[in-house]
Length: 416
Ligand code: HEM
Image (cartoon, rainbow, N blue to C red; front, side, top):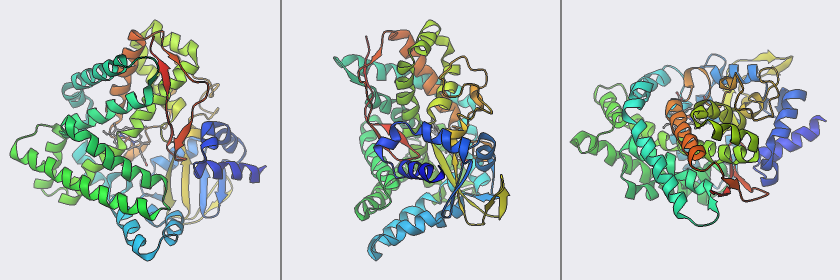
């Protein structure tokens, strides 16, 4: 039994497209039969309480920074030629200097800078009308297409443009920024290709140079975004270094883009697959905010998160060694029957959907949560108001991405 679950988990972690079609069957079995599963030096946790403790820890028993030296990366590194290894290290150095991978005290120092521009009051004042406009624009583009519309492509536009507004990136520059982001993401999915690693180094260098120009525009007064202004001020008052300022802005593009696209695209797919729930939303589109919480739970845009144990301890009788890579399977936790009744059912009326862990938990809780919820709520409210007859135009969906970031290749729908 355990060996077959290991096989299936292995296929998901290796991003086998057939395993990505329905990983929840495997995640559920993992949680119910082997909630603490050791796989070499990696341990997978899948119960809600264990995952919450893991994700919510702030370098007391688990470290984010130490993940830089996880066995998984050491193994990947050895597959490269020595010339490629330098590029591999360069990418990891950049990514492990980003906020989401920092431990205290650096984490709090950087995070403090971002909190005011992401407060709900500031988002309501500065971003709500922008998001409404971008949703209208996105649906107008869908409307302009005849026949079947690929909603994955349409859903991709909204978070990208909203990030552009947040960072002061003009619309004509977005395709280039998107290309850098995709090149970097392609490398994250496949840490075994020298070409991809070199392409990622080049993409980071292009992206960072572009971000330097955004910062200069803010300093000259040619730009007016609360987020860039807050980061420039933190740099001027020596709360963050210049490299940290650039890194924080670069992280936004990854943390806030494909995650939100997944929520919109897979959320739409699941609503159309569970037509009774689509009808519930269409009968009262003002319920979109609570629908979004249930979709966050049910979809789980990021299936798992990784850390490294800093102490030796025991969980449910299993020994965790210092240095073990710890994977918290959020997708399994979000369907834990100990927390959610009838968890495999999409139920927009569920009273405790908000207990999901899709946006993290504790000190690293998603700083863009308010913005992601705002985008998805406005988008689903508009979709259910304007297109109640919308339907899925495919029996099967092809899945790609990675084990942690599973994403549909296309979501073909008919709007009317
Ligand atoms: C549905 C969309 C989103 C999902 C599912 C999501 C998910 C997450 C998760 C799970 C974490 C915690 C990671 C961890 O603890 O290891 C996180 C952190 C973060 N997210 Fe999001 N996110 C979303 C949207 C956004 C948006 C729109 C932004 C910004 C524009 C954003 C910016 C960040 C940042 C900067 C962090 C790091 C916070 C820290 O380390 O203190 N995210 N996100």
